Image 1 (cartoon, rainbow, N blue to C red):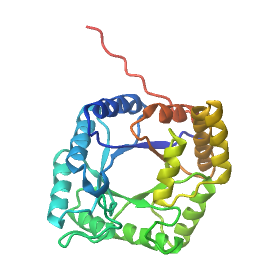
Image 2: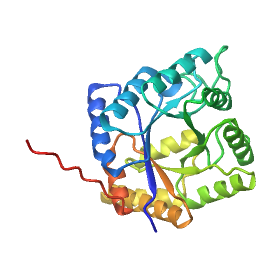
Image 3: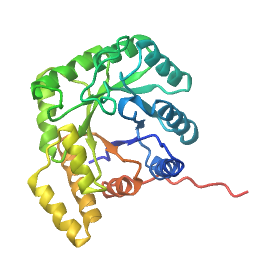
Length: 288
């Protein structure tokens, strides 16, 4: 079985120490030759400028194919499209187009009076520019704002019809979760690639909090396994084994692409990739 195509998600640094961590993350993972890397927006668009700086730096300094996250939160249509244009001028040709999370302190997303009301509107406007390859978000389990899974699938179909060429899923813990979603999408006539999102578990307590916010089911067996691993000091070993097995199950089920949410902590992602047979391409420096 051939090695899968891989991609990574980074987030923009907000401190000097975080900047060094992003640089270390890029240096460690770039040799694995990802098909692309993405850079997130903070909640409410709070890292808009930092995201732009990180995107352009990663593109210029590491030669990575960078997909910039772009959201609808707290910006007019013109402001959002100006940001997109600045990416294009910097040589960035891919965008992950998302509605975005509610600003801090708000209970739910509310569109700017002059802004995009949804990710579908944003995707359509970006597609009209003809300047980008657009990736959308997808939820293999019910989105917190969606009525049910059928609504998730219908909304993804609208994103693809608006101009997205592929979708990246929220993370999940069992391969069957992805397969059920993929089958439902195929039944609905969605034929664009759907890339599973993988969360290497650097902290089980943190992963459970994250899962609670985005509606990801936490299996009882996994909670029990990490409870024992934390007690025995084997949390990282279990995290590698669990993620590697999940990825292998996905590959056995016909998946060809894997997207890793690195949290700017590269060691676990690197070790999982190595376990899957994805090895770095060594570049020999010339000695003067």
